[in-house]
Structures are given as C-alpha cells and as structure tokens.
Amino acid sequence: MANHNTDSTLSSFVSTHGESLALHDWPLSAGWPIRGVVLLVHGLGEHVGRYVHVADQLNQWGFSVRGYDQYGHGESAGLRGELPTDDKLLDDLATVIDDTRARMDDRLPLILLGHSMGGLVAAQLVSLKLRRVDALVLSSPAFDLGLSVMQKALMNSLYRIVPGARVGNGVEPRYLSHDLAMVDAYRADPLVHDRISARLAHFIDSAGAAVLKRAPRWKVPTLLLYAGQDMVVRPAGSHAFASAAPPEWVTAQAYPMHYHELFNELDSAPVFEVLREWLVQRFPPVALEHAGELP
Image (cartoon, rainbow, N blue to C red; front, side):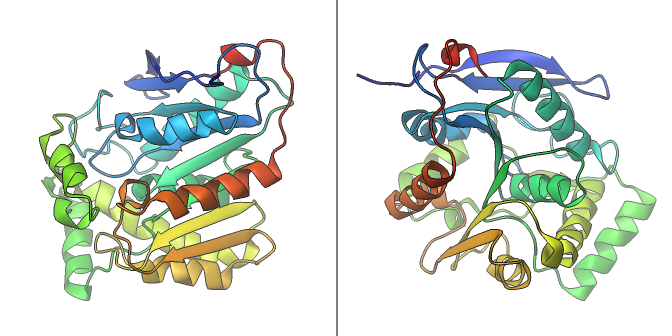
C-alpha cells in the first residue's frame, strides 16, 4: 500500500510584489505518519514540474512536498529570465516559506531542497537568516558560474546600464545529463526557456560569492550534492563551500562522473539513496491526524 499521492495540486499564489506564482503540492495520503515538509526550489530556465519524480521519492520516504515556479519561469508571472528587483527571488522564497509554515503543523520540520540557481537562492536566504528553516539540501548549487574577468566586466556594465536586457543563458542541454531521453524532454518542454537578464546574472554571481564568504559561520544542517563533470556551474564552488563550512553542519557528497542534474542522471540511484539516508536519519515520523492535508 502506498503512503504517497502521485498527483500534485496546482494553485496560484500572489507574491510580495503582486505577481502570481504557480505553486505545486504533493501531499501525503491522509493518515500516514509524516516526517516533514520539503520545499523544492528549481534552477534557471526550468520549472518545478520537472521534479515530479523527486517529489514522488520524497513522498515515499514520508515527506509532504511543495514547490513553485520562480518568477520569470514556468507558469509564474514575468518575462522569461527577467528579474524586476535584485532581491525578488529571495523575497518570493521568503513569502512561500511563510505561506507554507502557516499551513503546516508546528511540530514538523521544513526542509528546503534547491537545485542550481534554486540552491543558490535557498542558500542565500539561509545565510542571510531571512527565514528559519530546519535543514537545507543543495543539488549542484550555482555558487560559481566560472565567469572570466571579461565576462564579469560585461555583465556588470549591462547591470548598471540596462539591467533588464535579456540574452541566452548559455545552458547547453546536452551537458545536463548523460540520459539522452531526459535531454530530449528538456529541449521539447514548452515551459523551459533559455533567457537570463543582466540583473539575474548579477544576482547569481554576487550571491554565490556572498554565500561562500559566510560558509565558515554556517549553522543549518545541510546536505550538499554536486557533480564532478558539471559544465553548467563550476564544481569548484561547491568544493570551496564544503571546505570552508563547519563539518558538523555540512555533509558534502561529490559524484565525479555525473553531469549537472544529479536527480536526472542515468545513475541517479546513489544520489537518491544518500538523500534518503540523510533525511530519514534526521527526521523521524510524526503521527498527525490530518497529515494528508499538509502542503
């Protein structure tokens, strides 16, 4: 008998700036013990609908799951890849956290799981202590884009002069995963885009440096998963974070032969197993009468 619900519910959500964000919920079946709530934060150019299989695994392990399309992505408002203010993505995540906590039992932990740009947004929120979270999972976080001095100079000039200017984001789908079927699905997905604004690029670059600077003072339980063959972000950024952060707070696992999207790789089983062990060991099940009604 399954303890999870494979169907998600989609609802609209108004963010702090008045724009609508698309929210997806994957609740547990009613009456089953629940370990906590995981909030998914997706990466650049994609949408949370690409994480159905991740939500399904989390449900099977006893976690209720919620996710949302970030501004300028998926079914949410905004020009693709646009960022109207420097802190827009942080403000939106903080607001979704507030809404999620208002709907969940106080006895349950809230865990953020962010991939790539989403991992950076989640880590920056945690590092700035904008909201309380009980744990953090980072998948190939965008701590280091690997920009050259010339590229950074150009980006900073555009940010100052025309921050809304949008260009191609440079993501090569063939380097997301060794699974060619997944790559084909990414290319064919109508909700995937390849745009990035100067302001968004500046946010990613500056936030990555800021998180690395604060790593030695990290005090939130964190699982860091990163790919050794990542060609979208530099794995050196994750390595630097893991080296600087206190080991009692940060557990790091590298996958030397994997590409950027660890959960979509041909050999994703070891990734999911490490995630399962880390979560299950930390968060025991709690018997709640209405577990299935949680986000």
